[in-house]
Length: 221
View 1 (cartoon, one colour):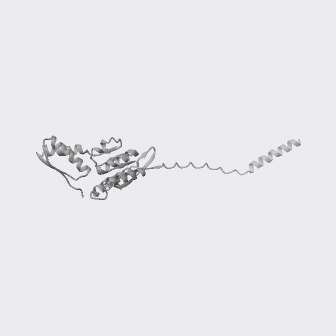
View 2 (cartoon, one colour; view 1 turned 120 degrees about the vertical axis):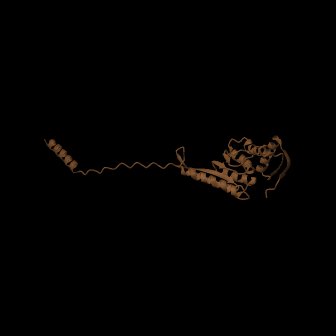
View 3 (cartoon, helix red, strand yellow; view 1 turned 45 degrees about the vertical axis):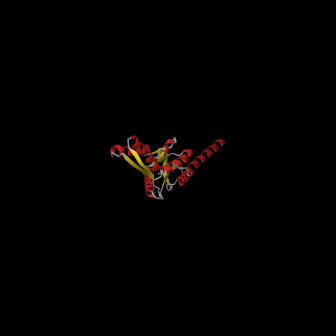
């Protein structure tokens, strides 16, 4: 009996303790962490043109166009592999000089640009193209027309205009067949562009039955 009373007392005490015990406040589940913003990928684009010297206005026009294209691309919110891309333009001046052109080409390679818009001149584009090719960086020129640029066989070199063969050929053919010229004088400016264009025009003039009476070059000073 005694054991039964003790057992009953223990059960009652346990019951009272349970009734009087304060409930622990429920802990709220931690809020789910907000998804981390997608990492931004910075893609550097190089631009090279003569922004100093005699044709600086042409180089600056090209640079402004490249800058505008970069701004438009960024405004579209382009993504690559799930990462938002931010394009950055690194503009360089080659002054239309081959030596300076190769120097800035190496500078862009060292900066790890993804591609290059330029150069403007054939005389700077051709030597610079070898540097870009070695580094595996694509190059697209908006205006260099000398056939040698793409005749080198570099897979990453492109142009957006017809080369001297097409342009010079059209000029020479038109001079004879379109304008009725028979005796024609040719003057170039000693630049890679001017000489290349004049060479092709001379070939086309002769092929169309015209004659070159004089071929002169003027110093580009």
